Image 1 (cartoon, one colour):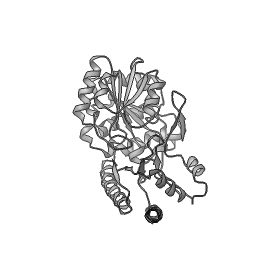
Image 2 (cartoon, one colour):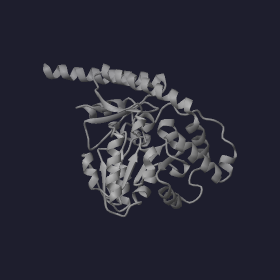
Image 3 (cartoon, one colour):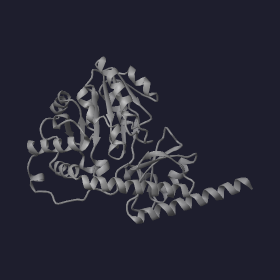
Image 4 (cartoon, one colour):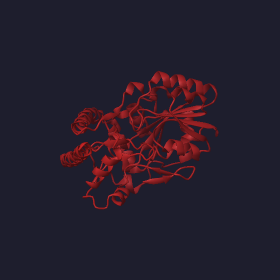
Length: 351
């Protein structure tokens, strides 16, 4: 998928099979899409009540979702939760909570944050120094970070939030992958201090990205301001039903976290076997630094396996988790073929 940023430049994202087919028209189908960090083991589908589709969502059901989400994420109460049709739609709205000024995004990271801040009329810049964020009116940190899995400690974030709050600024912490991160570092329980907005994504951990459900966690007044922008019925009936059930299903969540740890270790071992170094990530995606990252991306793409590559960082790749065993087998075969060709080329060079 390609989107235009605030300056008119193309922002490239993973997850577009149409783009994959254009890049690799002769690749075997179906593609194995490892370009996203979406859980391949989705929450079990269930039969929806007919009213979820035939009636407008009830306000009481939306409040129930907020209550369940508050408990799941560790927010103080339902009054601290604004539900939305995905976190993507929240980005420019959250950025507009402070008057246009200087927005700094701790990077390299998810490109949409800088674009959304620019849409909200901020002068938006990506920086690689955490301490530099204190100079911002709007500071944005992805925690754990996408794509490298970097984690910023809660105490450091709270100190930064205090500095921003003292001058009327705002700290936004995107915790899209905190479901599989060190949850003790989450700021969800600290939002009543003010000057903090925490974003949580439903679709990634629960493997239901197409449902479009996400949350902004903040003090009650900020939640009211966000909800006023959406008006009634912001979240569709099916998303309400899945959100209420899945967020309350703590057993499934605990089992899934254990399974993802095992899958991530399995993927690391597979990459290591073929000389592909894993440099970080989360249990939903692995971060790879490789001199021939472009060659690996192309080799796997030709075999119908899509990784996430970054045009501004040619030596970096991100790989999500395969799902069924046949996907693991196809990945193993493709890596073996790539490694064999790499080794043959090395021998020719020596000769």
